[in-house]
Amino acid sequence: QVQLVESGGGLVQAGGSLRLSCAASGSIISIATMGWYRQAPGKQRELVALFNSDGRTNYADSVKGRFTISRDNAKNTVYTVLLQMNSLKPEDTAIYYCNAQAWSGLWSAWGQGTQVTVSS
Image (cartoon, rainbow, N blue to C red):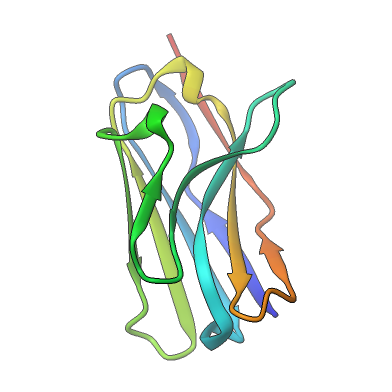
């Protein structure tokens, strides 16, 4: 299993930018996919962006061209995934969760969530 620690988020005006960071520690060699999901009040959790098991990225249509996911796995013990969010809209307001899933399929880890609020 891995432990996920998120940082970033906060309150920003529409059109502004924020950057989220998720640091994975523990059995990072077992991570197949890693990325970000979000959940707005009264809505289901949805994919925002992630790295697939083949290293390719996958974005929700609603964030394409505005959000960019990147990663830093240079350190042997920590694997970090970043989410740069530009041109933010009020509808991007949600709790953002980092997620990692194992190659084995035996586990899926979630971060504690970080609030992103975009004011109009």
